[in-house]
Image (tube, rainbow, N blue to C red; front, side, top):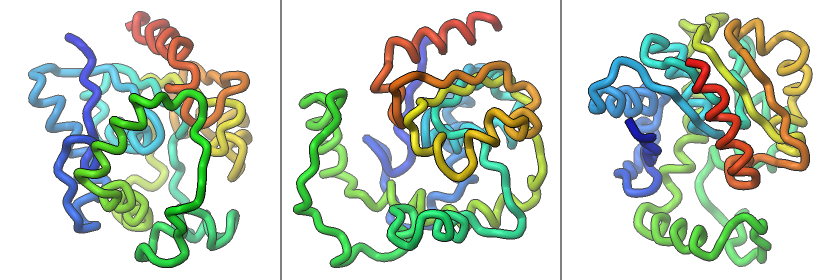
Length: 233
């Protein structure tokens, strides 16, 4: 069966409901479960990046019987701190100007849409045209609502506090990825915490000279890593 790269809710050609409550972790995981059911298969190989990776972790946690193996890019398992909300943790570390903290509020004069920016070399004109076409249709509300649900995610996942992810996993990150270089993630990934939370973590790959969008910055290398892992199964 070929790969199915779905648009997540609020992105691409999906519906983009405006309500924040439409983007809880249960809604997002449920969408993927529905896709798997529609394929008529018992299990799938899962590959995901960033927000998709976060959804992937909870899919593995909630419905492990559906996932044969998981290749996770950039975003490791998010160990839940029962004593502190996620946004509060990010605020304390980065300050109130951090983008996740700013996304909790309404769009206002604090954003300057005219600020010039230089696109990375790996974003082609065709890529940009595609993204513009999709966002012209849906706007940015869907994407922002993922971030506006972060603290609700923390609340809703309380029953799984301390739970372990038992699916076989290969984790790939870039040495320049801020997810990897901040918030104690290096220590968590390499110091035993990650393996404790994900006992079947089989490989951790740190790509040289690569940052957050490793699936675009080093796409051939990523494809090879995915193939080498899933062919073991």
